[in-house]
Image (cartoon, rainbow, N blue to C red; front, top):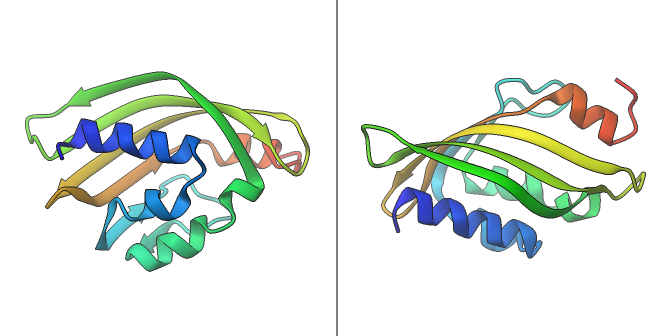
Length: 132
């Protein structure tokens, strides 16, 4: 599966709250980085670390849509840069959740091998009721 198709499949799984299916889109030795992370890990190594990190995600965030998705292809067909937004609600507070992301995905052997996910930890903390 090519990178843009794989990304669309990832969005579909997130909307279905199928975290196991989402994580299975990654290679066993994947790396996932969150360069702006504050109160969460900045780097996860391996699919099982990612699985543990996302295990309770649907209990924290109820994502209902991705209203804006722009996929930028690079000179390397295995790498895409995606600008997208997510809408939904924070489960704990019931407050609206809106986040904009820029993510870099690298695909190897039909799965995500690398992800660098850029988002605002301040906005995430506010959505969770931390009042950052």
